[in-house]
Image (tube, rainbow, N blue to C red):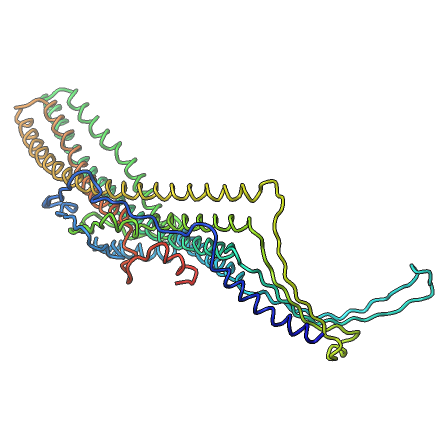
Length: 506
């Protein structure tokens, strides 16, 4: 008996060594990060850098700098302390960002838990029981006896990962943790960009309200003048009615703008983790912002490494590849090793006696013989999931390149639009001044004055809108390029290498 015990004990490390040797092969595809698109640029033609428009808050000249890194805190390029404070507050209090971080912690813990399957499981037990045995079933109704049993044992179980199914499952869980990691970065980027854009649009709407009120004041002054002329018989009543209509129409544009301003302020409050009625953020005006002069434009080959949504899609593809390996491995036999050592005795004290020793050793193999095609169809489903993840990755890449192209063209066109709007506003202002002078002298009709007023009103509001557009276009470009999270220190890790780091909590 002692020789059998020794030989069985020696068999365990031998079996483990064999399993480790066999474990060098993991079934299923080995993940390879998709190659970056071979594109020389983002747009079909060359881009023209917007020229300066002097005298306007959003009129600074801008130039595209290819290959330059984006600062991690890119919003500081606008040189607004109020914007910096709001974003700092949002990064601490925003619930969506907190939820994304909690999801990352959950995914990391699940990946670490999945990794435990590569190690043996060891369980221990200690029990002491007493029971009464009645021999009435054997015809001896007068016989009964109390029996005690004490047990102390340790059991060891180990699953041999011969075909790599367990390692593929760990790989899938680790890749899912990487997906969550990049989703945290995407939430960070979305929060900062949405908040900066909301603050700029709030400033733009506030500027429109200010300009509209100035226009309304001028129109009311003109109405006073026309009423005087009507009282003196120098003009007809339809001129008074027309001017009153203009004043009313201009005044009617204020409530929608005020409602839009309130909604933007509510959005800013929500992004910073506050209720709409809680506190009041310091308002930001367009004059408080500085338009960044140099616009970093990453190379197309770098974009797939920088955009967190692309990296998340790549990690999701990695997880799908690993799950296919799990599905393939499940079609092959499963091998297990087990061992147990313990002591049984009629009482606790007897457990220390040599004769109380019990032990067992075993090995098992399990193979599905018939499952009505379940494993086969699960494998085909996993293969389809790989195709789905690959196409989702490509769609994400296409969307990312489109976002960058749209932002670049918007910067180019809105820069030109601001220049044209400013020129149109300048001409319309001169024409209005001339028309008012001529109308007072009776040189032109009221219709000519009316047309000049309408043109000036439109061009003045257009300038304010074009100014705000240049700021929001710049925010959109920083967001489209990935937001510069990788410039905190190290260069951006590839999704493949970052997948393993995410499970370790790095």
